[in-house]
Amino acid sequence: MSPKIPRPKAVPGFTIERRSACGKIYTTVTLSPTTAAPMEVFIRFGKAGGCGSAMADGIARLVSYGLRSGLEPTDAFKALTGIGCHLGANTCLNCVAESIGIVLEHLKTGRDLNDLIEEADFAALNQIGQGADHHEI
Image (cartoon, rainbow, N blue to C red):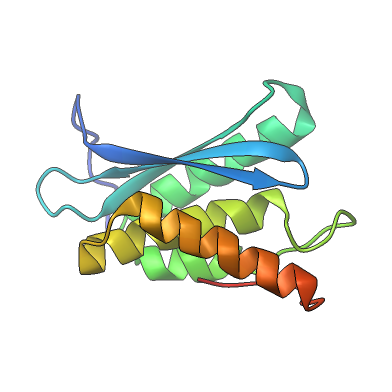
């Protein structure tokens, strides 16, 4: 990995709201103003505090450090996809991975974020109905 690039004072980004077995998850993906590539991830639970929020913050910091040091955004997406827990496939980390995937798809195709979120929700409902263990975008 290359050295971490400094963070500008202001960056554009997207915040995606997802529902998980843990409740609402808000994932913000910020973009580099020079390359328009993802450079940071912030994760917030709908309810603040607790061990889950602390773990999510730690994961977001590691992903952000990686993105600012040359980690490919698709590799971050792949690394977080498919992580389950005792609550099933619709876990916090899967929702974070889906959110990153939605932003990547938007950046690649220019498609509307809300349409992509709606499609992801529909796909998740179909897979839950079919008894799938986890889903990917």
